[in-house]
Each structure stands twice: as structure tokens, then as C-alpha cells.
Length: 315
Image (spheres, rainbow, N blue to C red):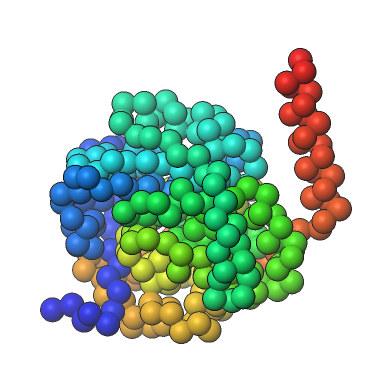
């Protein structure tokens, strides 16, 4: 019998994005997490990682993984929506450029722009502008892709929630609250408290190793993970990747906050154990970059993008 005090974390092998095989594995994990088989009349929001138009495909969620996840919820009768707020550019442009529009064209999915700013105070004392659209659902489905990250070491389920912060407000948080990695990690961690009921389906089939979130190298990790506790899932994935949690600010912030799932023994694994994936070869940056953006550099970059945009409209 499962200890109710422990979080359930599902880990399984998966070597391909082939839709029917991947859907079968995802359905199994959703069943273990007690996601209802009948979601008729329920709105499910898929939250992938759409980092930017110019990012390499590996930096974004895989369109094939999103397709498989969407298919699972459609088969359960849900109304399925998809939304994100990329770091650079509009989500609709990223969806087109990164192949999501064509990959999802056979599914009845509604794209929901993250545009309505909802100001929310966080437990850490910071007020953030998040997308109201991200919170207006019956189930929030977090679809992270495992990536090394130059500022946060590695990013997975917890970090992907940062996408509910709208547009340039992300950069403002970097500049105004990026004094330390711990301070910034606390903000990202607190965003989870705003979410409706949620589950994470993590893509570890092909991941980004060594650098990130853009300049890393591909690694076939061949796994998927799922949990309704993002902290517990990330901690299990760190063990799977054999990454020292003290090198990952989000993991240490979760421990400092005493969040369930952040400590050894805080999860049960009804499928495979993290140790079953040892020696993957995954690496994170040896030294983390500063979280804080340089204001002058950001202003120049923003003005340049504005002029390029105006130039395209005039031409």
C-alpha cells in the first residue's frame, strides 16, 4: 500500500517519440497518478516549453511529445488547450516555426494566447504578472523537457512553470530579483502555489546536456517521468541524472522551503527507480552564470527587436 505522505513519481523507459507507443506509456502513468479516465467537460491546459523562434528544436518541447500527451487527454474526453509565453517572440510564431502547428494539425486543440495579466503576490513577497489563461483550467499539464541550464544548472518541471509569467515580465524579474540564484529560485518555486490541479509529464527521451537552455548537445536519455508533485519529480530526475542537488538552485530552494518531495525518501516509484537509469552521461555546467540580466544590454536588445519588427511591417 502506498504511503499517503509520499509523492508518487512514475519513471519509465521510452526510446522513441512514436505516437502510439508513447501514448500507451503516458496513459499508464496518468492511470497510476489517478488522473480520471473520463474527463468529459473538463478543460486541460498543456504547458510546453516554447523558448523562442530562433532556438534550436532541442531547446523547445518536442512537438511529437506534445502530440502524444494531447492525444491522451483527448481520448479521455477532455477539451484540450495549449499555451505558453516564450522568452522571445509570440507563442503563435514559435508554434509555427518549431513545427507544432503542422504536428498537431490532426488534433482538436485550441491554442490559448497568454495575454491577460493577473498580478499575484508570492509567498516570498514578490508580486508577479502571470497569465490568467494559464490558471483558467481544470487541469494544468506541465510538459517540461530535461535540459542543462547555464543559470539554473538543469531545468525540468519546476522551472517550466516560469512560462506562466507573461513576456517581458520574465526579464524584469531577472533584473530586479536576480541578485542571487537562491532568490530567483524562490520566486520560480512559489509560482507553483498559484496553479490549479496539475500534473507534469517530463520528456527525457532526447535531452539537452552540458549547456543550456539553447547551446547544449543532444543526449538520448530514453526515459519519461510523471508526477503531480513537480518538486518530487525533479528530485527523482536529478537522482536519475546523477546530478548533485547542491549544484541546482531550485532543488536547494525546495529543501530550504521544506517542500514535500524535496528530501530523500519523500517519493515512491511504482514503475522504475532512478538508479535503473545510471550512467546516462548527462552533464550540467560546472559554473553557473549570473541570473541577473544587464539592464543596458536588455534595453539595447529590446530596441533592436522593436526596430526590426517595425521594419518588417513597413516593408
